[in-house]
Image (cartoon, rainbow, N blue to C red):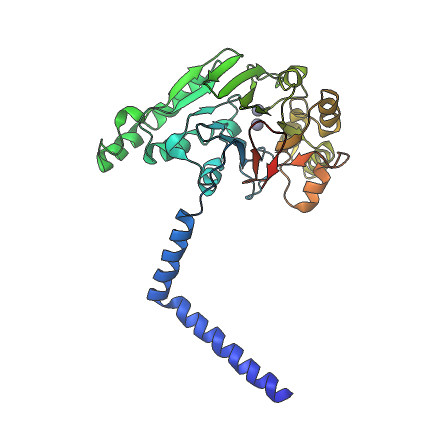
Length: 344
Ligand SMILES: [Zn+2]
Ligand SMILES: [Zn+2]
């Protein structure tokens, strides 16, 4: 028996050494990378004939979890591709999800807190180099023109470098700067199959702040942006299939605040106390959503951002099994003219 163990041990050590040598071989490295790139290029999202929502960011600014980017949801159909908010790290998630940047219809901003706009320049560049031939449209309530003008100014030199290097045919200068599309709450965008409407939410003192509703071939999703529990949102969400809503877990937040106070970080403790009045507390959100007849509630823009499965469980404390906690790169698929929701 011990002889078998010895032989097995020798074989194992030999294979480990051989594997180590192969791993350092340039030709083996090249072959592995070629295979990896081919797999990556062929592993884009499967074409889906319906309404898809891809979570490109589920975090809030409170907490740093590298597995969660800041607020971003992609709404994708065969004919449309909208991004709702583009917080920090969301461009990385958009790239990982291999979303069709060459056909980006537009970015829709809910308001102009940094955790909703920080990725704008990277999204603009990513869609420009993917082949977009007209300026990227950035929709938002009053104030979006200031945000877009600022980004355009800050990245003016960068755009010049890109075109000088790659040529005007590849990167047409006219498509480089973003274009602001300011709207009043109400109808934002419409064609034969898609209607996008916006409505005011309660993110006081941030005003205006809006949410969006997307209606496509008998299916509908609502995206809250940042808001306290809002009657206006629930009225706009009547009959919607899914409501993606920001959420605040008070128990977790209180623990953070106490820890900050005990360690003498009074400024940060006060900031934590301040955020409680302009996000939706999970303890009242689900009840209000149920009373409003919301079929499916999905929590994103999580305050504080859960760091692990324990804090995710704490976030869902007191909620029904039906309410879901969004994860980055999760995909919700709604086939047309049906009640089905496929979650991947
Ligand atoms: Zn906000
Ligand atoms: Zn926010």
